[in-house]
Length: 300
Image (tube, rainbow, N blue to C red; front, side, top):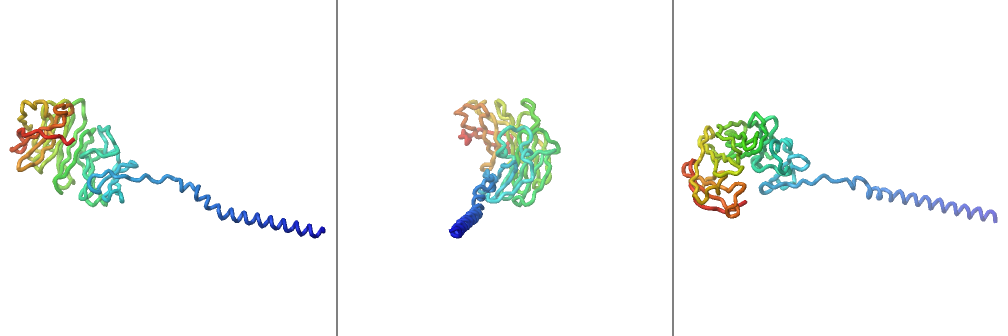
């Protein structure tokens, strides 16, 4: 009887040992799966997905993560522009910094150019979709820039228009032109006014315009050059009495059927027809004088 009890006890102990061994083996096999579920790597935040601000077709940019990147395929691939984001907004600017300022850059399949401010006013450019970049100095000084605009009419000729150092309703402004694709820049003559700049531009390599007056303007303050900026002359407008002090601010002219045309808007406080109408004027003497032709609906 004693021997039987010993045998039974031994069997019970053996069964318990086998059960413990099987349990530990099963636990070891399932433990890695539990670690995967709770693994910190699975819960780690993924990098923010870049969303392009589309400029045209599939070409766009982003300022996310405090970097300027450009894309030519709707954000599938990105190229970093070697410039600090703050330098793109340097100066007198308190607006939205999630998008670049209108007209402060060019982004096409043939040219990517961005105005930025370092110790001077500069332009950074790529002609190969961001593979290589070239920098050029537009202006040796770095005033507190308010208005900035860049454009190229062809591969060689381009212009930059800037204003800054504002004091109340007065400021410095200047236009710069290049004839070598942006490698070097020439400052044009002083236009003769310190009013706040509204806009400007060139319609060809010789003919350019600067429009002033953004605070309570009463009439256009518009200057033209027909000699590539070596001199500026104030243009005249024949405005019908009905529209006196209505159409007060000149926009950038454009070529139309062998002559020049320009739209005059109502300024910041216009209320004629709800402020949604502009006056169209034409010039047959390369922009020196302008005649009223019609009212046109504003696209804004």
